[in-house]
Length: 340
Image 1 (cartoon, helix red, strand yellow):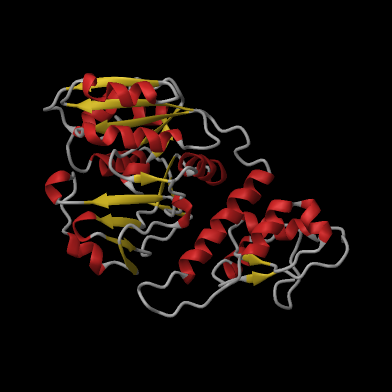
Image 2 (cartoon, rainbow, N blue to C red; image 1 turned 90 degrees about the vertical axis):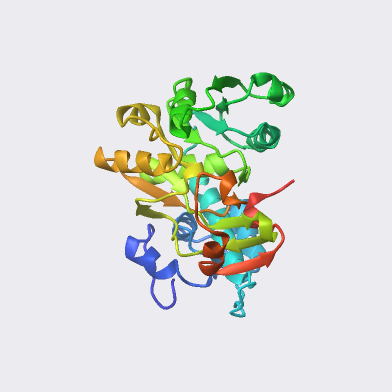
């Protein structure tokens, strides 16, 4: 039942659309197993409906202990309306955890395809930390291609040697445009899927698996996350913007999270041969070729913003403060970033 309305064994899109925005949906399980009682709840969890159940009965805990634990561990809270309130954020984190588990329990992306992570960098001081974040990725088989944009491999040799997975290092010309360097890196991929990684951002350990999951259940040609969390380094502040909705078809995703098939990347000509806008060029090319773009949640990703001279973007810090839904002092990512 949802309110006073019975749900079918597989909730319809209209049911999900109605229930997904709720602050929380309390599940009242029968005391004993009832035929057909579990499937609608599992389907709602897979759709990201924020379910809660303080005390699931034993048969539910036995049928799906993870779902039972997740639903019991979260209680809806009302936000206080201030920019620092985290009630809505905790709700979204709970929704993502439920969806991850329920989809995988149904066999979605049970055997994900291997991925090539491509990263271009002008900053040798960031390579070690970027590789350590890649090494934390769970549930995905991947290789890495690092394109050193204007400096020799000797400067990052130790970080590369300590990396536990296959890694290829490419030395690119300093004057080459960023998009060209990324394409040089992608040309070394030995897998059928390629994803971009930015050297100075933060990625949660489920980042790659979430992207592959989104590609599987959406059927999209290109997927990426919402650009939701930003760390404004000169201000030592974290902001969250919520104007980019998640789990939607779109023409925009965070550039540092683009994931697509290698064949499609080659077909559309790769990243744009420029220092700025190379990601947007690729997205437009995919759409012009008839491809579809899907945006999943951005809770496991934080973009770093420092001085504009250090970046390939030119938006002032004041812009991010204006569009922020939440603001916090210091580095305050979502719990899904799961920082060590």
